[in-house]
Length: 390
Ligand SMILES: Cc1cc2nc3c(=O)[nH]c(=O)nc-3n(C[C@H](O)[C@H](O)[C@H](O)COP(=O)(O)OP(=O)(O)OC[C@H]3O[C@@H](n4cnc5c(N)ncnc54)[C@H](O)[C@@H]3O)c2cc1C
Image (cartoon, rainbow, N blue to C red; front, side, top):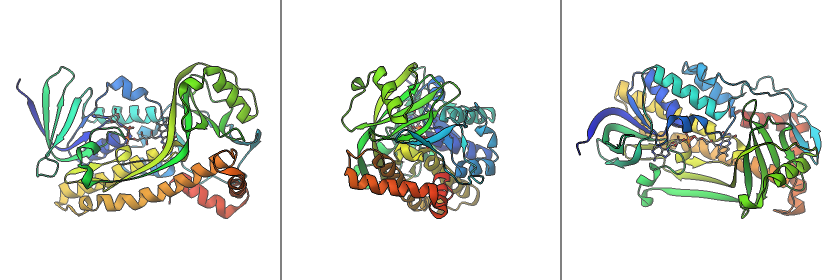
């Protein structure tokens, strides 16, 4: 069978947050690219995960003239709170400067897709069996099968691996050329997608473990319940989910439809370096943080911006220095956020539940948590980290 060959500057693997942000940045700056996504459009646009874009992300989209991608389904923000041992608390501090906003991940992805296609972007869904060749040579090649089964080839100058933690890009790098750093937290989350508004909305710290109920749209919410590392979804029938949520928030939570239920082992991973020849890893392909830190989107956007600037410099000025520095530029930022992720994740899980690290650690975590509510200095640091402005 004959194969169809195309030529582009950047082949982007994956149409998630990292891939589509990058695609839009490049398109706006006259750098041609092709985005290959293995799933159909409807699947990608309905995948619900994160819900907040931090101040860094909001500022970044504005600066690239892409503020329109932040427009979305309004999500109720009032009433989002913090509960300790069943008692509602509020940060008694001024968060006026916080520009972060609720924007469910699927809304952001849908908007990025609409803008990319409207502006003439080349986005190919249902690209099967993507494989990368010659990434250490002058002209990398990406092979795949299109939705009609035809063999396709994209020749490019650079490959951007934006295909998430389980994608093909990172696996194309020989293990000997990559170091994996990982940290297991020793507990998991039962992550539930429910077709009900988040009520109560917020996070609860309780001796039975952490709980969260976070808006994901006017009629959808994510429910999180801290659970043992070895738990399975079968151990969590629907009735147990709603009972446990009520117990940890200290208020009954009416049962609703559960759309998805899975166990998420909490861990942090970083791969170093984030490039190999002309292949560059962005977002979850290069690192993951636990969802408690809510920094996965931040890091994906940060990588996309750093890489976009580097490619634009190369194409416009013939200067490869920013590309050569890509990994060294991103990694210190990523480690900074891993430090934040470990701190906030352990703090929130230890402050209620003593079963993991004991009563002493619980008391220390509570003292530290209390400081976030009462000390301006501690809260300022907390706000900077959560807003992504550091
Ligand atoms: C349950 C859950 C809750 C989360 N909550 C938050 C939160 O509150 N805040 C936050 O900031 N982050 C959160 N995250 C993390 C956040 O969703 C990720 O960090 C973010 O999606 C990373 O974006 P990405 O573009 O790198 O990867 P992805 O969004 O995973 O996109 C990768 C894309 O590549 C495609 N792909 C994969 N393999 C291939 C292939 N072989 N060929 C072609 N395409 C391929 C995938 O289909 C996908 O479209 C959460 C994650 C989960 C799982």
